Length: 172
Picture 1 (cartoon, one colour):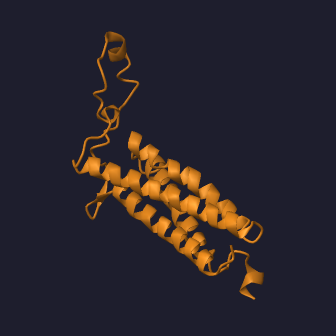
Picture 2: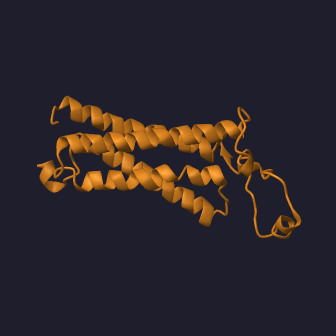
Picture 3: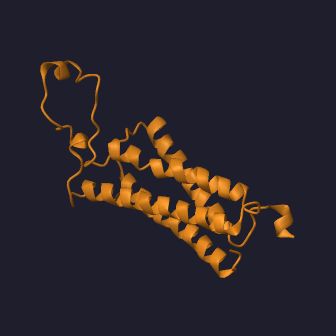
């Protein structure tokens, strides 16, 4: 009966629904902190958004066509999305490590990339480099990058849980 009410109310699609909702509100939150809160993202912060831009459309298509695509394609898309968010976990962890000083970040984030000539000095007011090694925000000792890593782990967990459920039901 529940399947008739919603095509998304499947035992293995529910974790995918959860992953989508978490990811959707995470990227909306990132935009809100930037556009409303005035936090300027650094180069690595912007790179951490790419997995959301790639993964969320895959998850949305997966949910919309859940009962219409072959089980092997459904599981493959679920695993692809999980892989994207594992990559997002890596990006967030890497950036958080740079913020904590565990390793060096890219020189372009520090503003010391190469030599400067007089033409570059004239353009200094136009270009502002946001340092990647200095977090603009911390809550409970965790920065935006750290929260992205934690949220990405959670999204990947729900996607992998769905993939394992799909495999166990042997609807491949």
